[in-house]
Length: 152
Image (cartoon, rainbow, N blue to C red; front, side):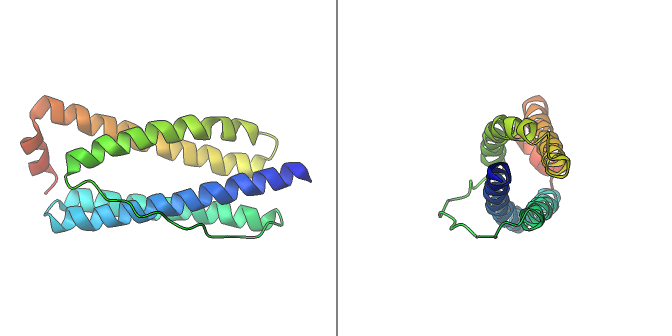
């Protein structure tokens, strides 16, 4: 019973963290689209939808395990103003997040349903990390202004 309670607590916290990230991605998508960077706007809009989808899976699993849902309060946070600032911040958030999630995925190995949800989420976040690294490498190779032109 204690194990279920722990899993429910972890899923609840991760789900809420994903909602916060989804909101950040939604806002930055709007910001980038307004700045004329439609490709970036679409990318982060899709990412916000993915985050909400994973949060929904985790909340559904909480309910399957007999837990109760709760919503945590979000702290106010400023968004970076430029795509470059955003990518650098996103890279650090992704690196820290993956380090925190990996042991949670491993700890859920005895609960195959939870494990699969967390594993899929980890893979998605890892792909996002690689994409962000690639964009920063591309900026280094072709220059920031050339990269921005590709995001229109």
